[in-house]
Length: 310
Image 1 (cartoon, helix red, strand yellow):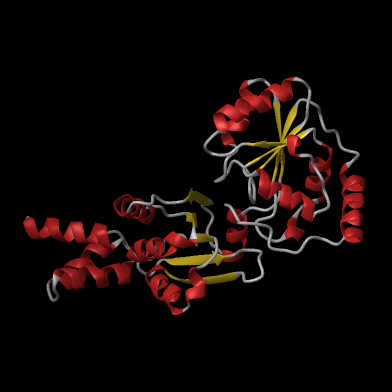
Image 2: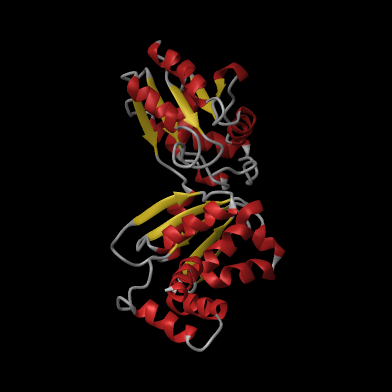
């Protein structure tokens, strides 16, 4: 998940010197094999979330492959690291397959190469997976350096209950029809689901998720940054929540769809819909059933049409 630039101010010279000294002292005694790719997590907005091990590795590798060389150079300077331009390799979603081979060639020469995306942990939603796969295919080692992740950050603040784990769905399709189909599928998923979204599409996503009725969702906006905002509310209240304050539609989003409620017995949803259809117009009955049961409105609408045609 990308951010436009590190939000925090650069660390002052004495501070970053102490941080680098601490990084070398804490991590310098470890083994860093040559000919290995180091997959390095970087902050998702708060510069202070850079780990000591990441500082040490980024200072000692022979080259750094990165999603955006300008962004990475800015990040490095902010934490007191200075790398020549020819030590940075552009590797992003549009050139990953080709650029990966250039990285592999360096690794085969015995170089150490780090990979960083614009923010967070590479190869999860950001580029990097093809590079790691190519590294393994070449019989070389990929060394992960854990750190900031919007996915784990959102989950840790959501208070999700249940023993079923979670599903990472990332970004849903941009087209309305495909997005609606994806939301219908999520309605059948009993586990928690983590979604990511960009500011220009958050309203459309909120309208799609509203079909899930009263199922709860935790919205994490600008996580770790100065204007971080976290709220938990029913899915059908999400569009109104966003509309209440234009600021809520700005920034990067990580959302956690809570596990589906299991209080309804099998067949209860159909019973509610049939009872309401007997008294109300179809669209009104479907809308109320979705709000009561948490089932997706599109699926309920199709079921009601099928009953009417029988």
